Amino acid sequence: MTVQELPGAGASHRSTPPPAWRPRTDAAALLPDPEPYRVLGTAAADKLDAELMRRYYAELVRGRRYNAQATALTRQGRLAVYPSTVGQEACEIAAALVLEDRDWLFPSYRDTLAAVARGLDPVQALTLLRGDWHTGYDPREHRIAPLSTPLATQLPHAVGLAHAARLRGDDVVALAMVGDGGTSEGDFHEALNFAAVWQAPVIFLVQNNGFAISVPLAKQTAAPTLAHKAVGYGMPGRLVDGNDIAAMHEVLTEAVERARAGGGPTLIEAVTYRIEAHTNADDATRYRTDSEVEAWKAHDPVELLERELTSRGLLDAEGIQVAKDAAETMAAALRDAMNAEPVLDPMDLFAHVYAEQTGRLREQAELLRAELEAENE
Image (cartoon, rainbow, N blue to C red; front, side, top):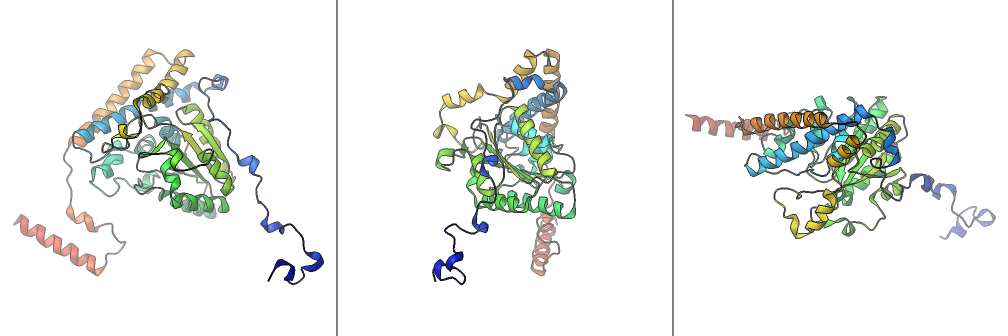
């Protein structure tokens, strides 16, 4: 049956589709800027909040030292693996600090620094990567979802929590973090679609660090930017310099406020760079050049903010030293705690599989218990 043969077609037939087929949103308002948004080094920096920026500087210095200490722990055999965020500290810290206590953070496996900046004990943040425990912390206590090793699976979870909070009338926002590689996963697309349709109070922060392990962005997508993907789902897309922490703070704060006010989700692409290898098991020299890395080191997030603040007289040598000393204190405590041998209970293997253990699981637990008792005897 053709359109012309449909009941009532005849004279009432129109050459254009009915209204339900037309675009539901004006695309122009959703498009990102052609260039990443920046504050540091521009006229917009004249309005910097000095106290806030000094706090951010201290967190950046601490974050850089945290990365260095965690990397050293892998070389010493105290961590099985560590995905470094050297070069990405501005994204990590801004994502944590723009949230209120009642909000939720949904990190990926690379976002341990974001969890630490939100207040999680550094040792607890690294417990999963050490292999000691399933997560290492209580997600509900800290409002930080478990660190997600599978790519992008935390994104639908963030949407579900945000949507549920909205249905209950809770004033809660979820911020979900993902890398550029995660945008190639089906979970990414499903999460964005549900978030936009439901107008869920959730922010998707994509840290575009150039590579999905060894796969460059150009081999993942032909889109103008990852932020442009937002338009296809009906949400705003923002493109921001991920190494400019002042710009990150401004863009993320705006998105959080918009979500909390009922304005729905936002997709933010933070253009940054992973200075170190994907993990300690990766050889980054096989897919990128030293000159490329050096060029990005000149756009270091710590140095960018330090240079801006010192040039404006908002940070002096004493303030820099105070930040470094605090970072060293954190690193020493982390080092001491991770050097202590953990006390592990093999029976914990059965503690968090089901809310109520199945008969088969109880049998397996009893078998292991008997074996352990026999060894002790």
